[in-house]
Each structure stands twice: as structure tokens, then as C-alpha cells.
Length: 290
Image (cartoon, rainbow, N blue to C red; front, side, top):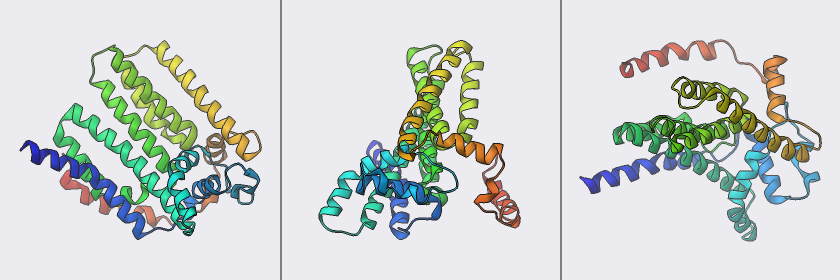
């Protein structure tokens, strides 16, 4: 049983990645929502230091977006991209390399969360989680898509794994506080860099730690100031240099969508796009309710 269990765990671990890569190569082209990060990764790989040639100067989009995720993807994909350039393959091959790296990064983050669930709830919970990841069509499909949401999902998966680890360790234990600190760091990075609305995931994690007495209010406030300032400094310095003006991209997104309420300028869908699927999904979910 030990060998069979190990084989099962290995297969389930790689199953979400296999499904995601299958979807990637079945639908290799990008959607318009991915255009900024896809083009930014392209420019970093092919133009590198010649920032004047970067696509965002001609096509800035509705709001500015951060380069931080694209820089990470370009660094991961650079060896494969270099090989494709030497071999004279079309640039689509470099785009596929970038998207494979995106899928691997998301998969690695979710596997870390699965392992945290195993440590807390046991192997059955981890296996069900991995099976759910592989069988839900949206997640494997979007795991290789260079959307801000996808970068945020990876960061939040790592943060959640660290939070889960911190929550079942001894109160005030150094390892527990370290895991909680890194969880906060990943949540803050996701909020400040990719999706400001992931703040709604950070808040419950911090509140639960505070109410459980795992960390004091002053220490938690200090963490927030340090991590928030650090994450803000990184994005402002990097993105201002590449955009050619001082800015905080995700702050601009929050201002455009939440403060100025101009999100409809991104486009709208008729009401029934959301109203009709909801009852169907609700009924389908009933067997799983408890």
C-alpha cells in the first residue's frame, strides 16, 4: 500500500500541470486581457535594454500594469527562448515558453498549498484538492494565461499555504510566526502588485491570527507598514523606470475602478450572462453541500 499510495500521490501531484499544459497547447494563442503581460515578456526577451522599443509606449492600455510578473516570467523563459531564437523558430515558440513557465509557477504554488493541507488535514484532503484542481476546467485553462489574476492566484496560493502552516503550529512558536510573516508578505505583494482586491484574503488571515492571540496588534501593524512600504517601493521604482513616469500601477487600477467607478469602460456584458448560470451552478453544487 505504501508504494501504491506514493505512486497515487505523485500522479495526482502532476495531474493539474498535465491538464494545464494540454489546454495550453490545445489553445496556444492569447486573449486580449493577456496582451500587456504577454507583450511585456516578449519585449524583455527580445528587446531587453532597449526600452524605447517596448510595446506599451504605443499601446498603453486602459490603465498601466506592473512589469514585475513579466520580468519573472521572462527570466524563467529566457533559456528556452534563447534556444528557439538560435534555432530560428517563430516567436510564438517563445510565447509558449513564457506560458509554460506561467503554468509551472501556478502549479508549484498550488502544490505547496496541497502539501500544507496534507500536513494539517491529512492525505485524503490533499488528494481531493489536487483532483479538484485538475477537474475544474477554468483553473487549468487560465493557469498558463498571463493575466494579473493569474499572478495574484499564484501569490495567494503560496500565502494561503504559509497561513495554513502557521495556524496549526504552536502558539507564539518561532516557526509559526515566521510562516505567518511570509504569508503576509505574499498577500501584500499580491495586493500591491497584481490585484488590489486580494486585500480581502489578507484581512481574514491577519484577523484570525490576531483573534487567536498568535501575534499582537502592534507587531502586526509593524509588519504591515514594513511589508506595504517595501512592496510599494519595488513596484514604484521598477514600473516608473519602464513606464517613463512616476506611478504605482495597481494604485492606478484601484483609482480607475473603485474610486472613479470607470470599470464599465473595459466593456460590459448583458445581465443574463451572470443571472442565468447562477441557478444552474447552485443546483449542481447541492450534492456537494453539507
